[in-house]
Length: 331
Image (cartoon, rainbow, N blue to C red; front, side, top):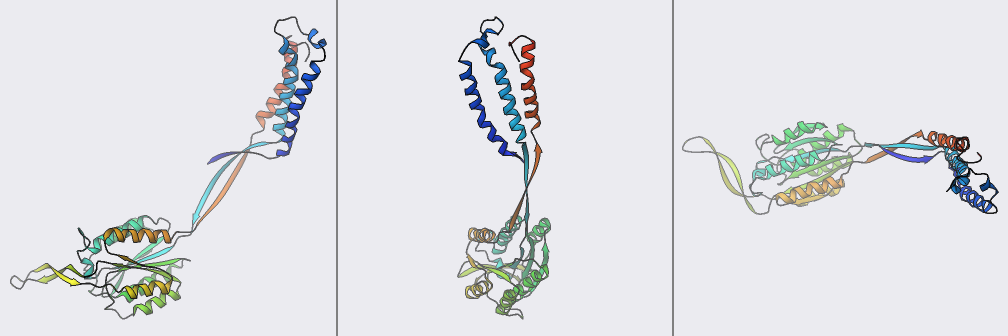
């Protein structure tokens, strides 16, 4: 809160222009003779007493003018309101997201960390989480509970849904959640590292659904091109126990499909081939999707003319007191 000085009736201040004129006229008249000086008490260094009554009245006049202008102190404060954006994150957790080309972590671990950072930077928005592999699952609908959402993202695992990459089902699921939210601005961030190979909904049909609902879709293709090590759960033929083996696989990202989805819905396509690039992608999306902010300014004024009114009264009485004490010859 800031204090802002102001005047309710500033036109009165124009009278202050007379102050230097009155002072000049007084000194010009005083220089014509010394009759006034002869009436002063016989004290050395008493020339200032000649002018004391005049300047007291001049200061009283100036203070009265300022009081009439009604000085005020305005205490201003601002109230910010924001219209949040509904954002549903559709995150691929198929087996290929376990690829270990984002050393020292796999793709899913890096994606989880980046998503958690993104969620923490969106305090004014409602966010939800859809995960998909061979099918789609809503982990949380739109919520403002950042702590719960952070914990859910942190707990994601590759084994939560059937294997496969059902991009169409994941996008349709996220779009349906946003439709129920009813916000004016709605966004899906779809993160995947593969090609649509599962699910009963074609990705282009899901994109048409999102477009019809006015939902922008930002698509993010993650992972490096070529053969990458992917951990695979297998059963040891000798012991019969399950174990994890790393197998080199060609994991392709269907960039053409992701570009088509984003272009059709008014979003953008991003490619992230390492952890730093993926973090930069989410930071860019964060900048693109800023929540509209409205700021209302309030000002409350308090009258501050009282000290000037008292000063005018005091300077009016001062010549009378000076004359009573024989400091000056006349009030």
